[in-house]
Length: 266
Length: 209
Image 1 (tube, rainbow over the protein chains, first blue to last red):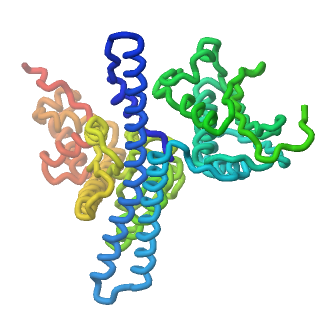
Image 2 (cartoon, one colour):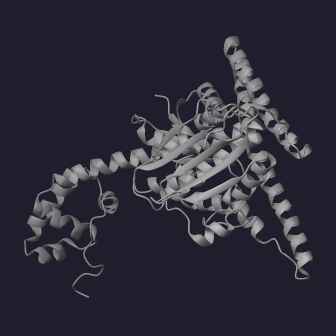
């Protein structure tokens, strides 16, 4: 799923927190946070559904033009009709995954091979990475077992961390831009780390970066990392960030393994 | 020759659908997944237009329009998921033919393409005409090139001759050669050609005033 447009952040920028007791303003803040998340969700659903809809409409137009000729090319009509089906299912899949998010506070968990989840996600991001001339290094621990989690949510966390990594590099760093994604076993936990060669972050940012609405990006909404943290915590893990000695930062999160190795490594 | 429509959209389903619709409408279609792809595809010298998604993965469609502004490029039709007014105003001000929201109406799209292709044909004719005129201008001798601005600037033969310090008969001779080489049948036509070539004219008033 794409990030909601930056304009959305502007639209939400005017959310007001009424003056009053601390308790009131906190309640209002959490209310407006909810409202913002809903707006983002609606905007991205609208986009994700509108794309296939536009394709469906255009393909139906194509079918009609084809059928309007004296000797319609039925093979062609069939090909285009199949695309209409495919795009219809695509739109419907977006809606059902959104419905799943809205309906169940606890997302559907299943046994997942974390390495596989990461590889699938990296495949999807390859274009974006190569657009920014980012060299991707993948270092996955083959002994990593399964974890219990929600594939889409975990991928959302990874996409967010990788996008942050890219954004921390494009403005300020001379090539080569490096992103390293790795997995490791730490006792009973799987550890996923996203490392970049970017500008890193300062102590002030370190203190607040997981808080909602905190951002160092000009067009950021400041909700990315806070959502990531909620997701990781819902998986029984911890999301943390460290500065590297060399320029750059490491964001890593843990998720409990289903079958941790017998002898824990140190 | 079929006109060519370049489609730049990062969504494969949209590219496919546009390809189908436009091919059926009798156009040549070239699809690109990004602005970078658009720069790389070969562009045959045919009337064409560019259908551009606003949200591209590398640079936005609006930025691409901005990058193209200094060169000869096909007229642009924008497609967008959710068009906001400021963006569409910017796009249209910068010369876009239309700004359509997805899903678009086929009739609207085809009308926009027709306008765009007509505009491109016109621009191409103008460019060819301009090149022809430049070539003709290059065939003038230095003296004839001095005569041209004086004549199209509205000076009488006598005034122009005086300005160049030559006889009126000689000036008339140069003037008729300029007309012939520029293939102008009347002075008014020569004036239009000079305007297209942006020939610098002498000061608006003659030196007698």
